[in-house]
Amino acid sequence: MPNKAPTTVREIMSRDCYRVTATTSVNTLVEGLALHRLPGVPVVDQRDHLIGFISEQDVLGKVLESAYLDDEPPLVKELMRNEVLSVTPNKSITDLAQEMLGTKPKVFPVVEQERLVGIVTRRDVLMAILRMRGKH
Image 1 (tube, rainbow, N blue to C red):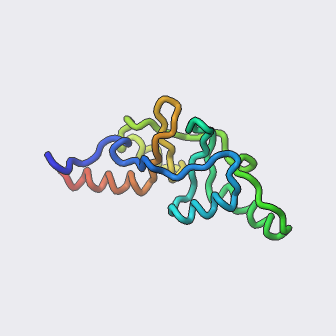
Image 2 (cartoon, helix red, strand yellow):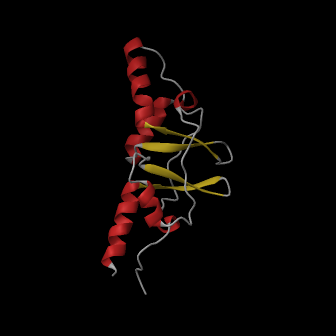
């Protein structure tokens, strides 16, 4: 059965995902978000354990303020959210899609044994569901 439609997050997640640390500058973060075309990214410690999440929305006001005041932009740790919604690689794509229907994040860190192993985006989930439908 070649090209079987994916059913779990593991099959659609981006393994080599962009991530930052708490001491990353907001300038570096914003450049990375633009380069990778992501609305937000996981924040990890030295052991790749998930410690937070930061998005464009989290930094927009502070970047605007620092530009206006001609201050140094802050570090990620000053603006990141510590409460992070994450998923496991074995989670069903359809279950995750149900969770994404509300105002949930557009990007979910994928965590296995407390370590960041990838990310999955709303777009990844949408494409996977379309592939599933095409296989009936």
